[in-house]
Image (tube, rainbow, N blue to C red; front, top):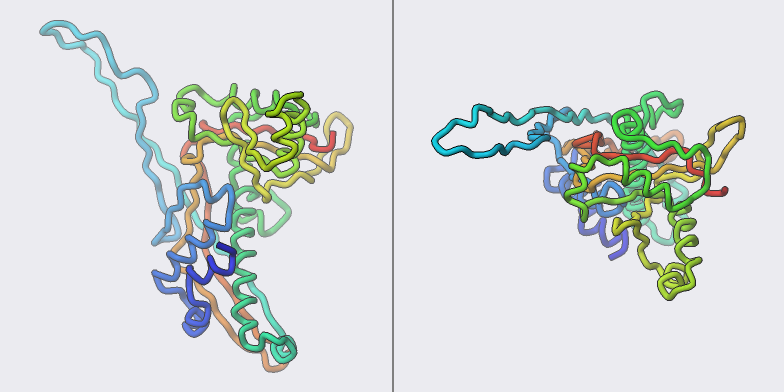
Length: 316
């Protein structure tokens, strides 16, 4: 199913425009599903449709052995207690403004159907913009959009386990370093672990695997076979960049990337149900104006269950 068909399943564009404002609950739910289907890393996340702008997620755990030797007719003398904590989703408001001139509608062979196609196009872009914020959001960023909230990379660097590759190239040891840093208690659900990597990191890693003089090595060079390390899949995420800049030991880099290792169920995305798509006209500039507004946030349930490798040079 292509993107246009996905959006058609999500909502009838003409009905949405006719509404001229807030999406009804059914439209919002379907549109959230559509945004999720078009994402990659966020698609693995646990989506939480929110009725309010802020939500606390209660967590309960044990964290240590709770069993003791049993003795006949004797109280063991100890009591174990669960631990309680909270993860907070605090959504930020995002607007996607766009406009189309009267001339485009008049001269395009699609005529009035062009409006539907433009909205579908921007809906696809909204999905990418959301995922960019989920991954790269950083309140210390000079980019006003990314400065709205702290995303998965920033949260992993501040609360997770960090490995600094110091500008070195792509090698298998990077993935091993990450696996070593994740506490063993989070490795019990091994099948849910994922390495989230940029397309260029995945390509470089597959080249390493392809150098093996075996049929398995040929498979990575000749097909779209998924790559793994220690049985853990690598998930290619287009919104993870491979052109980050930095100066390391006096050397300037323009080809840096990062890798995140965590459990899929540890990723959380919250989207406020109240979304709006408003339309207006500017009769003086002769354009149709549109504004899509949403509120979103992303976090980890347990930052301790995340490891991140920073400063990897994909060109080295």
